[in-house]
Amino acid sequence: MAKYDLLLELNNVLSKIEKHCDKMIKNNNDKESIACTNCEFAHYGAYVESGCVYTDIEGFGIQDMIKRIIKKNEEEITLERRLKFPSIYRHFKGGFYAVMGVSKKIDGNKLEEMLKTAYFDEKYIENYRFISRHTETNDTVVIYKDNKGNFYHHGSDDNSTDLVIYKTLYDATGVYSRPIEIFLSKVDKEKYPNVSQEYRFEEFK
Image (tube, rainbow, N blue to C red):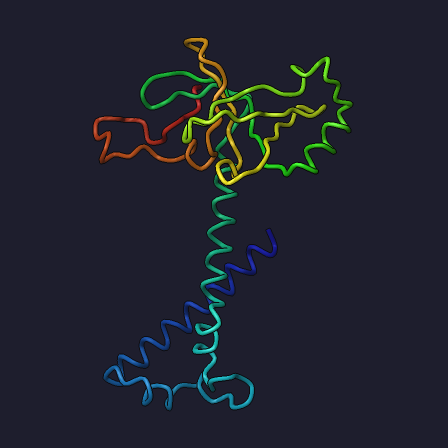
């Protein structure tokens, strides 16, 4: 978290410089050349390529990159905090589901290595893998389980994200796999205006 906090601080500093530049330009009747002449960030000569700190920061896309990293970290923190398993979740349409865990994407070589570590034996294949249905593509996704109970799936263009593994409690339709960001997303209130539940799936307590 220390690196994340530093990124937040850096983003705040860059945002202040950006606001300063916007204010200077506005005060000089939207004439950038005059504003830069009177700006303390624009006289660094050989230290910066353009002569302006913020112009170089913006030109190299540094602030955009920092914002993307912060957003990704926020998403990971949010997902980690909100998803619980094993646990019972209620879908906003009323169905109840047992969340078994989260399947991590893994490439073929690592998958083979993982199966060897788990002393995989073809005679007991049901102990190491099971079939799930991808809710977004309707494809069959094979889920593998290691000797510690962790879930994995082979990465591809169609299932390149972490998948929530869950099954219904009201019938025997089997196991589902859904991208974690979709599982934890909010209900589309424009499409379902009368739904009181805030999220697509919520933990049943």
